[in-house]
Image (cartoon, rainbow over all chains, first blue to last red; front, side, top):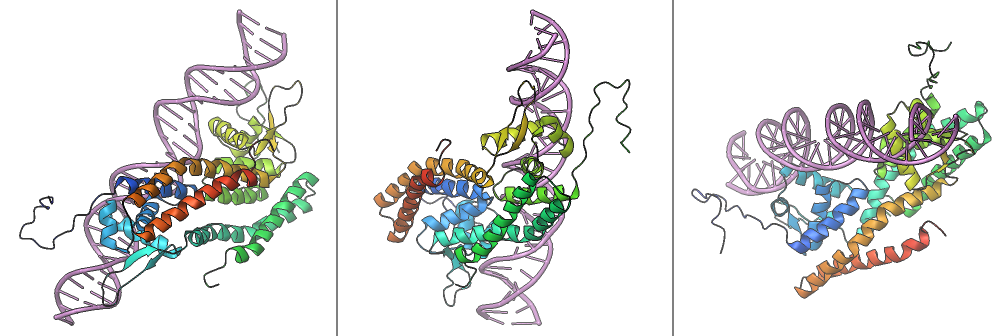
Length: 173
Length: 173
DNA sequence: GCTTAGGTTCAAAATTTATTGAAACTTCAG
DNA sequence: CTGAAGTTTCAATAAATTTTGAACCTAAGC
């Protein structure tokens, strides 16, 4: 028994009216939302990913919006985020107008890309500042204890920057 | 030239009036704040840690509050957080009333403790739910593609839980 | 060229998270 | 026991983040 459809005055575009998430889908979404929360990724993004993850085929914009009951803006931004971090792929069929999305094959790779994009810039930006702080401390004849700490911090930072490209190969490897 | 001190009517307790952070201290604090941000740790906590980190001796409550220009509540909560995550140590001198704080020797260990406390509970809590979602999918005869994904997710989760105690030994190891 | 499906942008509104400060609690010295 | 230093609690407020939705692009088809 289909729902009577929203006041279809003259039947214009047969708005599909999507189903809300089923319990097992909600449960998975919750998992992704919690995990994403640790990295500061917003709920809506995690929900989109989760939906694509439990769905076998690729989904288009309207399906995502409909099933998650989310605004256009959020879907657009969420897809952008996931795209930028290489967590989803577009599977545009030939001759078709709309794009359809599905998760990247490897969730592991996706997470790595995400981490990369969050941590690396911070490390890079910090580099000169940290060096300056250390130099400053040495020059002012700070306590050896403090110098030691700052030195270690600098070493860490440099090493992390050296290692990063190996562990987290940039787009193209 | 000391500041004239706040309306000292009769000189009661010689309120110390702490210096604001110096440029190099601010720079380091910024670094910690940014890094902390990635893990969702609030600014005030990162600032406290940074201050202890660039200071040679241990600091007491009032010094922290004074130099950071922060409310009592924030300092108390911040210290609690850092304590709970084993990132700072109390060095109460014998016969003294107040506690004095300094960073734990190993920043690495501190970070590990922090991660541990954020990630582990999420993984643990997720375990049963994820298994349920997978069982559900199998029972409903979901697409092999989806089953495959959910299986992998479960494997990941279990492995992470097995490995966790090795890499991140719980308090006492 | 026009029209429009399909998406994006972005300022305003809603929500979440962090900070404050006054009151309450604890503990030690006397 | 009393007094007060030292700290914690927590409701109220402030700040930061997320979501929304309506206006605005942009390319495809006619």
